[in-house]
Length: 195
Image (tube, rainbow, N blue to C red; front, side, top):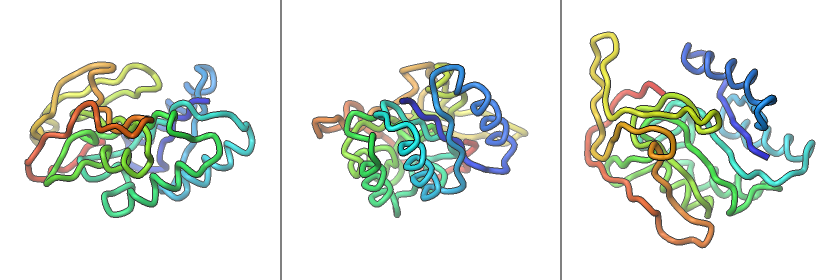
């Protein structure tokens, strides 16, 4: 089973993504879960697993992000979130988790949300290498290192990249517990995030 999760965020970008993914997912082999916060996401994944009882091969969490957060998954709570996700029936070290928010695979002040999530989850977690659009589920993901919107410049975090499809993602943690295939690289100040 493959699951794409979208937040009940009133932000225009997230509302549009949630509506699009809810319509797209069922006819494309994905289940779509809408959630209010990360604890609601864990609850909804548990409910889904009880209903269908299948191995979760992929989980994509669509969210706003930066190197320290993916919506309300943060450096402060990632340990409990990763461990709790791993306890859900059907979720294992073979489940690939995509933190589908801007810059989630980059580092700020020594912290990287995707790397921290992989450490607590004890499995593969993917974080984006820049400002993200599209989704892994739809196979239309792309990111840019920086951009300008409404006269506001969103600067790149060091290590940020412009990329498409598989090159969008930094992978952390492996089912065998080995170190990350790519490392976070950044020492820049925090930026406002778009997604």
